[in-house]
Length: 158
Length: 129
Image 1 (cartoon, chains in turn blue, purple):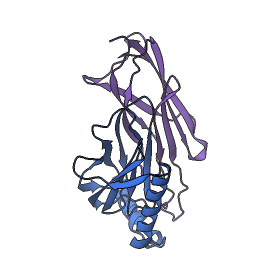
Image 2: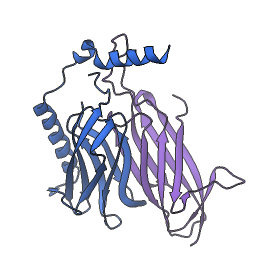
Image 3: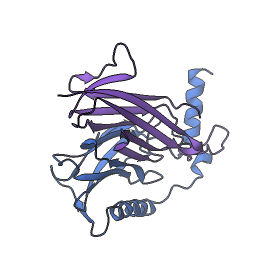
Image 4: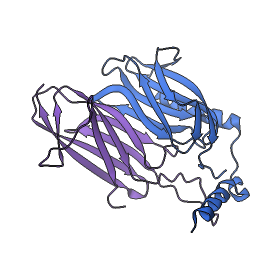
């Protein structure tokens, strides 16, 4: 198959009305799913866990490009700067408007060398990306970053 | 799927560590140092939301879990979902224990949909600092 034909087919798969028939959930439903995923992460931090919004240099940091050209592979780094060894138990990345809010949950073991993890994720559209950090003292830090996506990942066929 | 192609590199302050010249599976590290581990696997991470050209829903095929252990002790684990890109890449830091050991085994294991199970090991020769 020639490259031109292949590209044409790929566009058809991404844009076809058949694929769009899988109803995209409403923004309210997606935000509820994100809230449920956040609550589940906080519940995993045990009784008395408190969710706090990270601001400035405090709490969890989320490094992601604010303008993404290709939503199929977006580098992302989550970290808690200056965290003492063993003070961060888990890190998570969630999204607001992907088909599923969860992206990845990282568990830091006794031999983790820092409170930092990187991966690459898919973004279905421009949206808010959320980082969470579960600290050993029961605090769960949350940071939200808005990302504009010019070419969306073909995650939902739409 | 037999044999999940996994790339692992250990990166120190001076760049990626090079394997021993006589044994490609052996890496020399310093006790007590912190190294970055970069792991990636060759895998489509099919989300289960996409359709083929014929309109059929492509079955979900994801790597769901990665764990990195050193001599059995957990370094880092990751639960992955559909939003992780194809050929998943993970980078994290590894604290080489200061305890007087001369050799250690670093294991990266994957588990995923359709019964995928795979592990890779790296032998580290630990030199005291």
